[in-house]
Length: 204
Image (cartoon, rainbow, N blue to C red; front, side, top):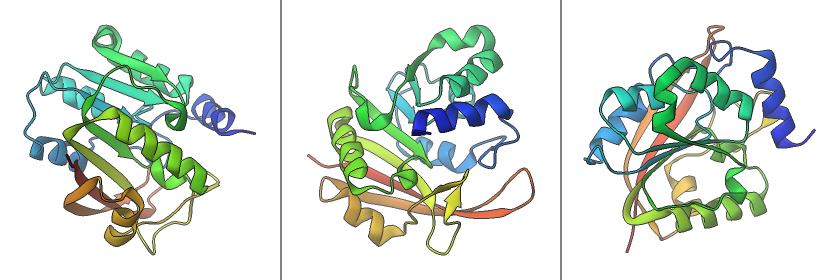
């Protein structure tokens, strides 16, 4: 089973509120986006956004230039159904981020728990190439990943754990770390997962 088949099966068999990464409100993501001091017309892409409620919350705050990308069409369909008529306000992209060709440059690239699934170095390089090609100079990158000492797997798949030093080294000199945050995420089944959130700016 390839990556796409895996995630399509997950979102076909489970509702969005049953998956371990479900958040009723993505508080830290919203706080970090607010820290970027964007105009509501600036462009934000939520990579691996799937059935996340981040797009709902951003629409409520007046942001009107939003893209949600996910490998799973089933995941995006959950979000479209939840949003109803508001779904037409969002650009939806069904794509593997490592193969994504961005139709525009983004002011914010938000990724909660996609990068840490890329256990193969070649996939991480492809991701970074897409990231570099998609974000404006001076734009912001928010990446959330399992912390060192946290879970080693998610949804039956191995992940790569990160801390500040490891992620800075991975992304390279094109990006400067602005802020980091820690989160103890409680899954729908009551388990605790330790995440690190990292806010970077893309250098000139």
